[in-house]
Picture (cartoon, rainbow, N blue to C red):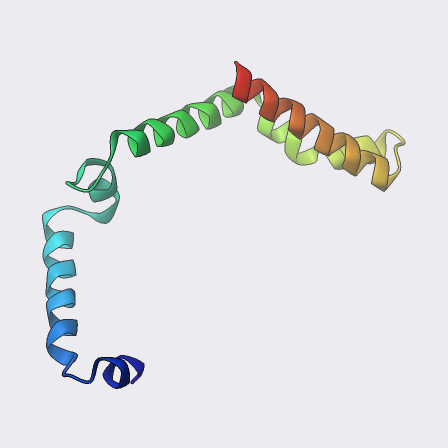
Length: 103
């Protein structure tokens, strides 16, 4: 209703055009592939996504993500207070981020 009030014309035709365009694009190429290889994709997007996937794979292989995920619980169980464990976990995550950024 808001579009009808602001545009003051028949938006049904425009809506049908948008739906038909979306359906034809989806038939031509799945959305995930269109994002990577479609006409609107960019090399920067592909490079950033590939780098993120590579970092996640390295974390999986090194089991760093498991240690980071459970680090607060591990620190609490070895005797740190909840607040100290949370701050130490933040420090570890920060160092990991710096290591990723500068390596």
